[in-house]
Amino acid sequence: MHFSVKRDILRAAPVLGGLFYTHDYLHGKNGWIDCYFLGKDKLTFYNCALETTSYAYKEAVSDAAWTSADELLPYDYDLIFRSARKEKESQPDTNAKHAELGGLARLEWVEREQRRLANARSIQVFEKLSLHHDYHFGIGLHATIDVPYLTVDTINNFIRRFLEDEKPYCHNQALTYSYDEIEYWGLEPNAIVEPLENPPINQAA
Image (cartoon, helix red, strand yellow):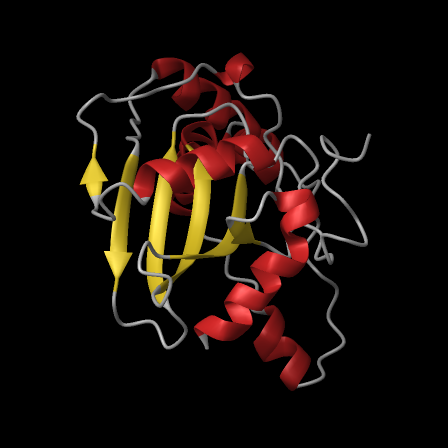
């Protein structure tokens, strides 16, 4: 299978630099991507889930805020169950105010809690990398790196550093961010594209 990965890397080399392949559109401010790259021996390849430390922090804070909201007011609407039974019940009113949440709608409460948790800096993230040999497609690699965004340059720099020894690590410096240091607190879906058809934005010029 590494031959197909190598082929994809070579095909996308004019825009991605020749070290990796991804089908995620690199728009210049990605917080996470999935990508593939070859090991130093050129026979091994890595199936990599890559994220920035600020994205990991945002996800950890958001998960904590939603968990707290569910503890105060359990969210028991089962969309799959109700759809399977074809019950004609309306979805819950997302704008409804709840006494359990201080008179706020659930999303309003979560957004306020995200700000509080982020500014409290009680949640910490670390720059780290782990290897997973139970993947069916390549060696799994999960990496959280301390860069502002994932771009062609920051991804290639990460891969070059990793290939020096191809070992897992976890830095001991804890990282936190204030609410205002995170540019965007919403979901971050990545568009699926072919790199040559939709070049990364920082390479398009």
